[in-house]
Image 1 (cartoon, rainbow, N blue to C red):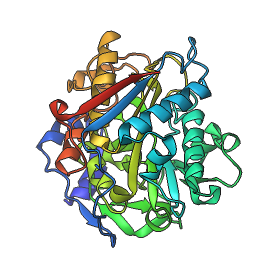
Image 2 (image 1 turned 120 degrees about the vertical axis):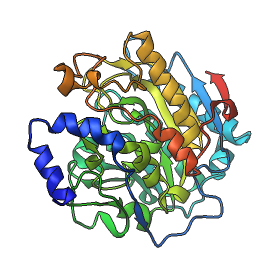
Image 3 (image 1 turned 180 degrees about the vertical axis):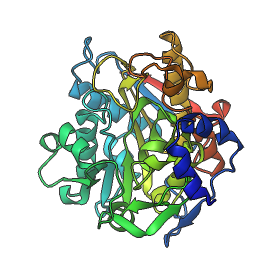
Image 4 (image 1 turned 135 degrees about the vertical axis):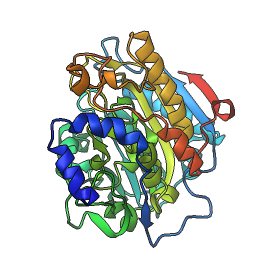
Length: 384
């Protein structure tokens, strides 16, 4: 029997969940075929000019005591202090000029999945646009982008940025779409669970239009990867057909996140990482439809190395979970899975839907995307 047919039969049987989860470790690692005509830049944007370096700016004034309001003026000061410290420039505009010139076409990769409470905040996105325009990048050469139109619509960035800034989504919901939004010539091919469509194509806006990308993820727990930070935001947010990596408690995100992030031209064009940690999600991520699992780091991180920032994020999320009495993101006990325990993840912080793969950060480091050794990561902490 062919593997594809076997997997379909397995999925239709009552034992499918248990077999898929228990046998996953014995399966061979996925075999990836990456196709792209693009070559890496002399200095790829990831890990960029500041490998292993992170600037963390914290302000107790950035978010109101009840967590519902963000202070735009405080965010502006946090952004200015952070970018200047990262680059060593005395003037904010000169710091931004380290990365951008007026002729650039700049994409701002937001994260809208945690709507309404934990998304790339309007204030950080607006301040990013303001600084790009100060450098000379015209509004029509700036794209705020995400994969899903319904998410972007609900977050509604347009009223917060100047007229002319583009708001772009590749598709309406999480499904494979064969249309002009994806590049047929840039993709990663892999057969995870015998699925019919084995390709994940890069968003065409990234491959054919943008010259630079700013990545603005959030500090969030994630049911499959452990955290959803810089790497996952640009990787799973930049390609089609990625949800296929999860099946019955098993996830291939360990290797797929880094593999996607390393594909050109995403790797070379993603030149700045701005981690939005004003609010965060400690359980149930990447979603935040209520404030139930939201916490408030009131922090923004800056860097060019996505691995270094995400390595810090692993500890931030895990420490918050421990503080709340929840299991670690590194827990691999199958008894914690919802279909084994019979509990609902959204009701129980000690329940999950997939065995998390926080090791995806170390895997990405092995691909050359950054530094994950905590002893080699230099963190500069500022307070505003």
